[in-house]
Length: 419
Ligand code: TYD
Ligand code: MG
Image (cartoon, rainbow, N blue to C red):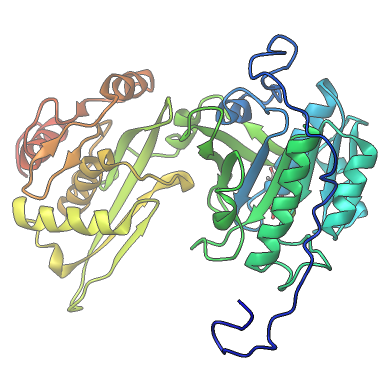
């Protein structure tokens, strides 16, 4: 343009030659179908809960982003992944810009890493990461974290959006050209605002988020993008001093602390990907004189809970405008599906009227006019609730209106209608 479009200064622009990497010579062009039998589609890691989320395993040359809040367990999980891969199919280079080699070795000892095929290196510069990877030729390259690797010849601050994107682009290009799968670690804060993972989602093939309450023992590895498999699968792990362990029966674990005699608690069979999961939803209702009573929601969309409170006020005659309402999904599980509406409504009603719901499970969407709408996968939900030996299941399949579902719940546990 010859001038800066913002300040119109003609001297503000400096010509910069963009290095083209090692892109020289003849590019190999091959048939799309040739070599099908020799190329392995994907390599299972050997950790079932992870392979499920990955859609079977790691695809050669793919780029996988593992995001999560600091301290959630990303580094621990990936060191374990490295150990598994190195124990079966080959070597892994774990390039850390966050921790010293000594720190990683201490963690490796603590969680019982056995394989000698896991190589660790403390590297901060993107060129060093790539040079080291070219030298070691690992079967998988892990970079922890993308916010901490930097490049002296890229503008912007370390961890800033432009550096993060540029560093990621280089690593991804390396993965594609070398066929070495790349696992990138990215930190996200609770509101997802920090530069990084969100802006990288379009660049990589697979995006996994590790979630869970920082002080709860459960961790959920959720697939939010997968070019090679279905998304919304979730892997469940529990945190132990020796690292993350797979949880064979998450529903059983998630509901093991529940007190069926406590008002305000109900079971909700949710579905994550293809997997049903029974969780406990709790509500607490407390009288208040405040003109704007407090509503606090954990693990559910807050706006949705506000809507349910409105429907209960209008269609079930609960005077919730005079009460604080707290709603929480237990165990650090995050629910986004509308099928949680009915259990949320029942938990609030049970907390307000002080009657326990016993072994009742419920699912179904609640409409603004107080009607119940069917939720998908009801057979899957029912069989999981039955497997846990839960009591009656309340759903839109028996009741057309919220008020009928509430009356049915009261009748089931009281045997005597409205108390
Ligand atoms: P870390 O893997 O360092 O989290 P991130 O890389 O996401 O920031 O884990 C945080 C802390 O939790 C660390 O001190 C190790 C500990 N931890 C365990 O003791 N057991 C576990 O199963 C996990 C996942 C972490
Ligand atoms: Mg870490």
